[in-house]
Amino acid sequence: MSYYQGRDKRKPTGGTLHHFREKRKYELGSSPTETTLGTDADSRKPCRCFGGNLKMRLDQAAYANVTDVKTNATKKVKILKVKTNPSNVDYARRGVITKGAIIETELGDARVSSRPGQDGVLNAILMK
Image (cartoon, rainbow, N blue to C red; front, side, top):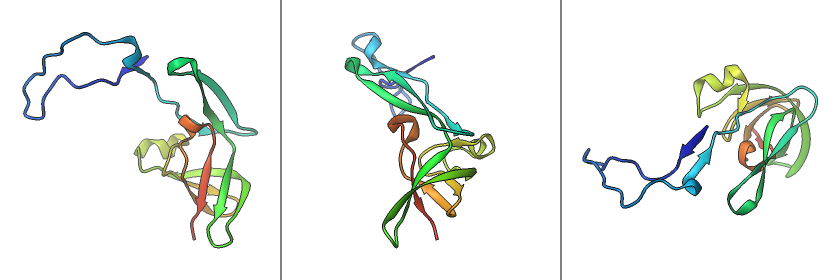
């Protein structure tokens, strides 16, 4: 399914906007990649982007690169579960990981600082 990323048909006042042309193919977006909690290894899938470029989307994540701010050390740590997700209440129950989600790791709780569905990597900052 495609998503149109152009202007809305309504003005902020509620009136209608009159477009000077129709929608274009390059203005379409793709459906979001909801990165879920995996079991063994991370799985990525390539996605063709504008201009023929490739974007790696993280489909399932089992590990995260967790940075400890006090020691400035980064370790690859296994994710145990998704605790909360501020972008959607239902995401925590389903195990969907987005930017800003609080995940429980072997080192402790961490907040996701990268966009796994866009970047293809899961970086997090350790919370104390």
